[in-house]
Image (cartoon, rainbow, N blue to C red):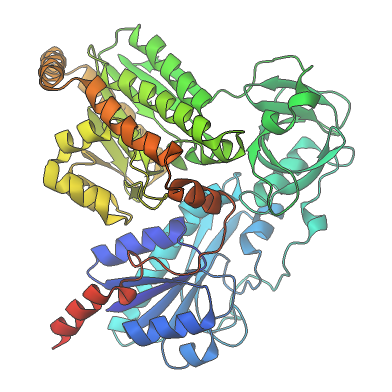
Length: 561
């Protein structure tokens, strides 16, 4: 079946559907919802059997859905209507929520229902619920609908059958927090519901900010509205009852950046006491295994983040356990260097250079773990340098449903470092390495296993996956051949170093990166600026819109003949 994904942006859900539908044998192309005429052109070029809209902000033109079946993913329970479905579900503390696959009609969310899924909600931020429960439910709905189409069955239900209701878009007032009126728990719910975009509005130290990335600060209290202390780059703030750790802020305004809280409160928070708070890196031991858990907001790793993780690895190595597990955040394993902090720096080129060198130091530390086996437990999506960070480990255990984007080129033809020119060919071979870096497409676990970017499949259910990690790691640490495996690893690394030192790979990569950062071609800086500021695209890249790739179109024409 030819399936066109029509989306506002190629977000995590769109990427997951792209991976799973292609894996199921469908001919899939993507068109970004830039202009109705471009959408019409895409449909005319691709002639899809089905249009799926995983993430839209505007209605599909009527002349399209009248001729071609168009199914819209709505992140709401049956009967729910409105653009802020997930936001309201979190604000109201809904115990059960869902996803509904709705056929396009004149009124948004009002067409026949083709499939639906329901799930128990977690107390978490909107982006996490979206990346996990909503995504899994949406994939299930889409695959069920395709099965119904294949079986020549139509929609299941009219839209007005269900427990949902029609709700308007969340207003500014719904997202505004007053520490004098709200408890920490109430404020956290508003922040979680506003996560990602647009943020929760609150006045801090006399300035208005949009707030993101918060957590309960247990045991802390002060007068409502007061800043209590800092930990890392987060600040603790008091409410009517309790307190919150606030990780990220953004000043109101279209051109303002979302940054760690202390970056925007540097003067106001300079006098705050440093107190024990959230740690991005946590280490513990169990059954002869060292578990190092790390969590960086949206997977972005600044120079300081890289240094903090590296220092924790150094401390873990000193424990001399036979197995070390690096377990990244369930939402994002890592997306490489921190483009937001780079964009905000006085010199973006200098901060880019500092950040990539800190990332390289981190990767080198993992490669040089010669006295243990290192497992990268990839539970969340990974992109760019984050993928190559995982390759520094000896084995990569990847959860079902994770999506990888192992390429840099969409960021202004960025060359990339992280010793990828050593790690990638050594793991997958030269030919597959070229395929990985040139494809510019997301991949799922099946392709990652085939190529060698993953060595073990973990279950999709998060808690079961974590149990499997602990079981397998303990079995590995207790295996009779563990010492022999570590010795073989040490010998292999020494042989590789003799052939070509790691320092040589780093020098060659950084020569190319220096040109990206400081050279005459500004492509990287333009692409980074557009990405951070969410500048709308003027066209869909042909890597996604295969219907706009003349060579691919010609191949399809030959196949049809």
